[in-house]
Amino acid sequence: MSHALLITFYFPPAGGPGVHRWLRFSKYFKENNWDLTVYCPENAAWPVIDYELEKEIKSDITILRRPIFEPQKYIQKKAGFEGGAGLGSQKKKGILKRLMIWARGNLFIPDARRFWINPSYRYLKTYLTDHPEITHIISTGPPHSMHLIAQKLKRKFPQLKWVADFRDPWTEIDYYQELLPGKCADKRQKALELSVLKEADLVVSIGADSAEGLARIGGRKVEIVTNGFVFPEFNTEDMQLDSKFTIAHFGSMAASRNPEVLWSALSDLVKENSQLAQELEINLYGSVDFNVIESIEKNDLIKFFSGVKNVTHGESLTIQRQTQLLLLVANKSINSKGILTGKFFEYLGAKRPMVVVGAKDSDLEQIVQHTNAGHFVGYDELESMKNYIRLAFESYLNNELRSNPINTEEFHSKVLCRKFLRLMEAID
Image 1: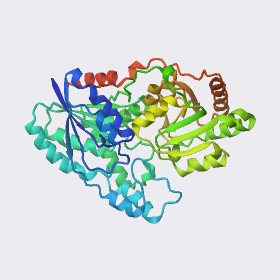
Image 2 (image 1 turned 90 degrees about the horizontal axis):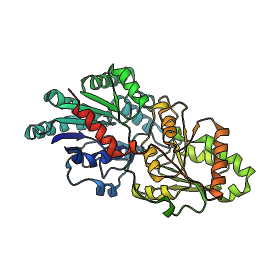
Image 3 (image 1 turned 180 degrees about the vertical axis):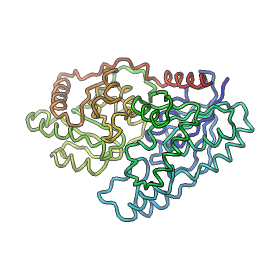
């Protein structure tokens, strides 16, 4: 029996997209002859809290929780600034908010969890000394401070095998330049990134484009293990679908994810089709940037918009299975071709058709085609979007709007966890 230590910032009761990759993988360690110990914060300022997810933690996992000091959360309260992966959704950023962004990009290096690095190292150094059965360390980021904890442990215990798991890029992440890094900060970030890529025994990323970027920076091979999902068994014929033609998005919708091509298409279509105007309903679940609401209003769609709704992750999975058409949008950014959001795999599990907006020739477009999960539309492909909505609405009227995905089993978290563990076992 092998034994691994996972260092992660996101673990239940943390919610949101960052938690699901390793919560799902953790369920399959024991059946693959691995023990798993998870090290995570106990009092973090997670953007989302979801206590229901704690029910999914397997009892055979050892969990180590330690306090974390996050000074920025106290400043954010005064500034009215919401942290997390994005940069807030206010129309205007005051001086204090702009200062917060600058500080985040120039003082909190590699990120705002940097103050957890040394206390974690001291605690885990003792723990590893007392538990010599642990042979592998997995660090998953962002936040990339998790990699620096693992790096210090690897230097202390060189016999340990270290796997650096990148759920997102580091200096090539889409919002990196929005953090306003100065020359010194940028140099420091890139030096830390390179040291992690050079020193880890194995580097893993979630998609081809992201892996290529990390490989180019580090000058080494980067393995790919995508996100996945624990696909539920249920009969789609037993699901009671929404009575209206619902188009729904689940998760945060930042300004960079605003699907303007969809709003433009719907604006034209409701004018030419009175029946669509009677049946259409737009549902957005999660945090939504003000730019998105403005686009809906500008396209005269507000009467079809049911408002922004917040639900638990468990509730969202049920609603996804009832929705007529699921909407997925990739960030429109410099690394948009490498974005392969975990939400895609959840949608696969819902077995409902998707309309996916993203960059052409991207990892996301390829996987949509590979799984036959829905219709992919480029950011500016208005006619393609209109044609698909027309066909989908016609199928809805005939009670024939269905999804027929293929090749889904290779994206089951059970299969992907096994792949990850085999890569770990193959480390020299």
